[in-house]
Length: 346
Image 1 (cartoon, rainbow, N blue to C red):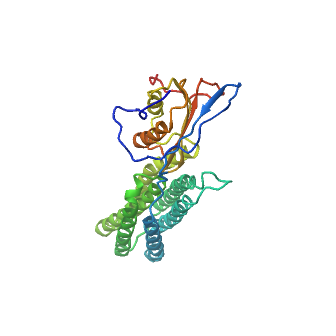
Image 2 (image 1 turned 135 degrees about the horizontal axis):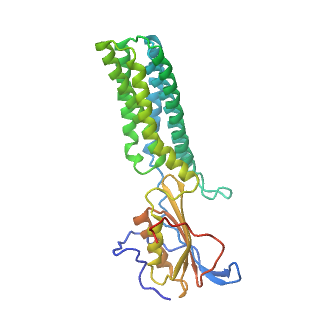
Image 3 (image 1 turned 180 degrees about the vertical axis):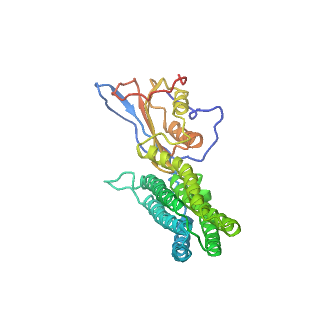
């Protein structure tokens, strides 16, 4: 079957400038059961690997240096002022430094080229780093909550102004660091982990400032551990989404924002496609989405333009950057079970 235009998953299709032909030649071979068919594979050429830009190195370096210096200052003054909130914040800030190092290492690992033994490179490092960051935050906040409950049973006075000044510095440092990763957090789960760490730290420091002011005004010695406990709960609630999503991706779950039913419907609407099976979508890394699918096309190989346009369509509509499409003349049952469709999805 000869096509004079590319796929049409949607009503409108723009020229995305992916004018590179698919690099896998057509070739027939025997599939399970002895059925002969042709397969052609397509990848989104121009190969948009969506690697974090070089300036993330600068952001990570600045964030780590600022927070490491602040950990020393905060721990010293927290010990002198006997403030659990300051000491806990210093400990949490230290975990943030570790989290930033982890996220930076993963971002650098993602740039490593694929090899014969690691055909996808180290892209999954970003998923594991996001998972590690989420787990690190949950553990740090759990330790803070336990310590706050213990301190609440026997509250002690703190040096109010010392607490306020040091924590205020923390608000500024953590706020600046969080701002460095704000833009990237919208697109990359690994950077979102770094952002949540720093935004959470800014919130902790802000709570410590409020507790210090209230202590000076009302003399409430119990407020310091209560504020620490409340902030720990807020951060756990905010971190749970990061932990859940990164764990989901670690087990090859369909990335958030990709509707597998919509992808299936898109492929079925392609000209010449009779059926779709073996459809899988998963994350290679926190900003790299892959797809594999078998298209049953009785008319045969549709031509390279078909794959070029389909790759552009999948990237535009679903942010799928690495599609691999296999063409079959007849539908072949290779034992791969289709995804279970949620009730009401048809």
